Image (cartoon, rainbow, N blue to C red):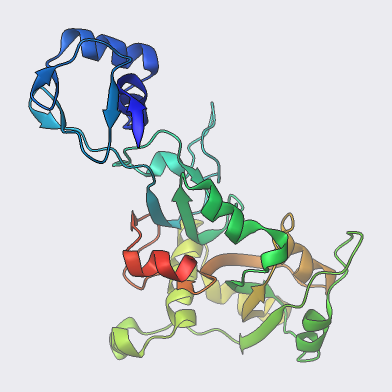
Length: 278
């Protein structure tokens, strides 16, 4: 790809176009062993060697990160007042990253951060119906008849019913998992998500068992949806007389939230994971 020098440096996160012009003016910018002083100089990102004060500047057209989003952070590229999911990516090289879709402020879990608009459109396009699976702890004891109701579609106040969704009732009385009692390999996705839920409630000064007393009994569920309406999961449970206490996305398409990626952590997607998304 052929790019102007100032655009390349701006894309690499070194500053705005105005700021990188000052870098070019004040620093030793070398292109294939020749000093560069003009911002409009063309750079072939596939062939040319570019350095600033002896440090190599690598151009990456696209960056792909997987984030285990913590609660309390908004799913946006930027915000004047609040911290965003993109702000959490400390070692990004691109300035044009954005989240693929949105998770509510208080929802945790899998979120892809990239600047690849085409891939994002493929994953979010309504006609693609990409599966998104959530682990949730909800109010009350759920009737098994709801499994068919969720599959047939729920009226959440929109013009049409929700698309077919797969509801799995994991446990009608969640337990505090003894982490030392089983190996990491024996833990299921819902086990790991439940531990995150326990930590979530602890941060709020609550003990999850308190919600199991009397009429406040809670239920663990897995829900797979194939669209992304506003607050969809929460609205679906509200429509059947329940309430979501905790929500975490654990998979998107064929990509699962890695077991070793703790809440608030992120890393670059591997080539294998990118293939799953594609």
